[in-house]
Amino acid sequence: MSESIKKEAVTPGVPPAKPILCPDDEYKALLASLDTYMPTADREIIKEAYVYAAECHILQKRNSGEPYICHPLAVAIIVSTLKLDTPSVVAAILHDTVEDTPATLEDIEKRFGFEVRELVDGLTKINKIQFRSNEEKLAENFRKMIIAMAKDLRVILIKLCDRLHNMRTMDDMPMDKRKRIAQETLDIYAPLANRLGINGIKSELEDLCLRVLKHEVYQELRRKIAAKKSERLAYISDVKTVLEAEMTKYGFSDIQVYGRPKHFFSIYKKMIERHLEFEDIHDLFAFRIIVKSIKDCYEALGMVHAMWKPMPGRFKDYIAMPKANLYQSLHTTVVRPNGETAEIQIRTREMHETCEYGVAAHWTYKERDRTAQPSDAQKFSWLRQIMQWQNELTDPDEFLEA
Image 1 (cartoon, rainbow, N blue to C red):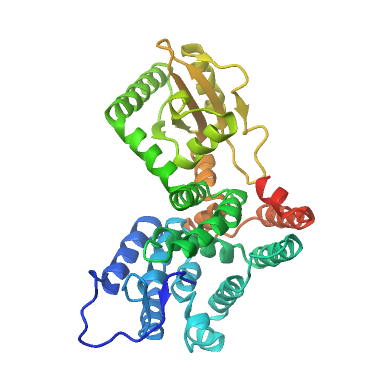
Image 2 (cartoon, rainbow, N blue to C red):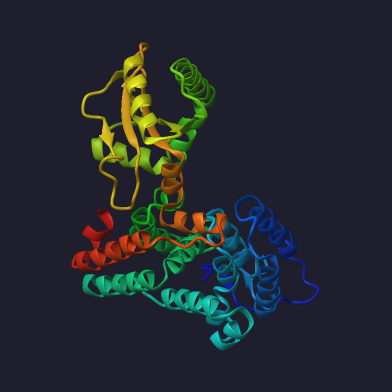
């Protein structure tokens, strides 16, 4: 459910206070996203869902003045970037219809089938879970969420996309409400995204929470990082060029090297945990080397350590010992001849997909081959993980921090 909904009829003849996003433009953006991430998606049923949801939400608008339908369309776009499946995109478009309009689950099933009905029902139930309560109640509500995951993980994935769009578009809400939602997001949804291995959503949620809860800190970090933009770009380009040249010399082929600044929240967290000033943090960037095989990962690591001195205690082998959320990669921090440090992650393409999309990667593979199904091993792996989470839920804080 959108946190910035204003349920009132649009008054005819009264111009909006600010430019209104045209729903058709948002729908076109969804189609473009499908072209990029889900080319095999069923556009006919997605269009039918858009028309139906637009009619359901026709008298509603958001606090920003946008027609309300823009929100579920935006959520559907985020869902498409996770490369899920057609029912997930349809459910994202319909996710608020049963809760906020006269539409019923029976209507949804009749028009879009039982699978979509179940997804919408799961999303409606999750929206009713209240996390502002005592610890015992909090643990019970987490159990409800995990039961929903056990039934269909896509429900939680769509909910994370819903929360991400709400966090992106909360500027028109009262500050106290923004802070409440941001705190809930930081306490519940960002750690949940981490548990599911969806690092892109987790990192953006954390940065958006920092912007609301520690606004001055966020702006100061932004200012300091922006002040070194040209220096930062030169540094990233230099390291990237050296790594690419060295890997070519060593005979690696079909590799990719990326450099990126770390997220604001991770920088802030390091400052707090290590009692450091911004100027004392030297590893503001992370580099990724994407190779073809596990063998190449270890050979690339040897090349990097032969070229630059590794820092003691900073090597981690998440390939041999994956994280609980299935994350795999080699991590090392090295010191270059000029004294600068560089954090480097080395992984295969499949590992990179799992790193970016977590459990959603299972649906990515299914979308590539419509006859494919997640293997029994995958299904039971996640079922065992979910059952383990239920057993861990005696302490919600411990569960989320793990």
